[in-house]
Length: 497
Image (cartoon, rainbow, N blue to C red; front, side, top):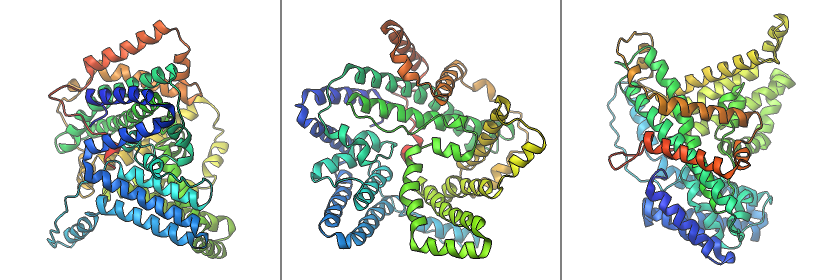
């Protein structure tokens, strides 16, 4: 069930009404029923049982950690291996034949290992990480273990976060998921505003651009040169409006239940460095890998020994940098693997970001020295604009690899970057529907970047003005949005990861 369909909106509003009709004490049970029904309708009962079995593993092993604290590290490792094993089974089972076939092509051997068609449970990439974070938090005693199995099941299966995240932590959502949330009108209309705004970003901007981007990169030998550059720029706009639009719908829908979810975006394209961009893009994923992969790695006995060795060989300052770079290399490769069973994603979402990060770390204070020597003012608009453009340029390299049909064809796509095309595709670009709505998104993001919460400011306006704006967005969606009986809604990009 796509969340950009009328069927989903009907499901959502019906569920919200039922939620507030339930006795306050048992409203979390309505959320559990709704989540279970959504998953079963979307993927079937068998795949719902797969999710439930992951929750069973989580519940049993956190119970064992509490009962037998002397062995809790063993239970931690075993439970995480089991959850990752389930994720690997459904998501990465074809990685082995893919790797073997790829190496076979390199050595001109036709291995032709067959792929296994296995349907993955809805949101397995997201709920697995949420459950792992819960296990870690129980292990470190930062939270108390939830004794009610069905509440753990609701945490792991809350249907709105299974679509494309955010990756939630138990401590962030437990109170609003399980407490008796009161019916507050502001939660309903604030959530509704956010859903409408997200639908506009997805249906009017992202899906319109998806047609152009797909046309260009699936026919890159025809649409060469300028069009490939245009395609990757449009993809940068598409993926942001697709993913952030999904987050707006999810966060807004959750708000209608009175459940506040963590923000997953913070005006990323206004970032002045790549490290700042990754702090603002898919915030919950970066936070998970930082807190549950990178920090434990750096604190492990192995990395303490590696750090001592690097300090001995390269000095204290440089040795510490090399240790951090090694940990971040593992982190970025895992992020790349998380994005999909393809070497393309390992390179684009893992290796390239790490190379850019390593370059920034190793360059030391060279840019500052150059700026000082050339007397360049760094605290002015023009310099900040330059830094934003520079950051975006690096990101376009990443998006270019993602847009390429495969890593094997990347060389050919790069070659066609330098071939002139005389085909006129510009006339087919959407005009009003994208350009004006994009300006609104840009303005909202810029104001948020400057610390002005647009949704809070909007709420303070007169009721008539607010509804005029909402009806304007609804009208734009109805006129320019991509939907209808003959329209197959494009899946959310991050829903496939």
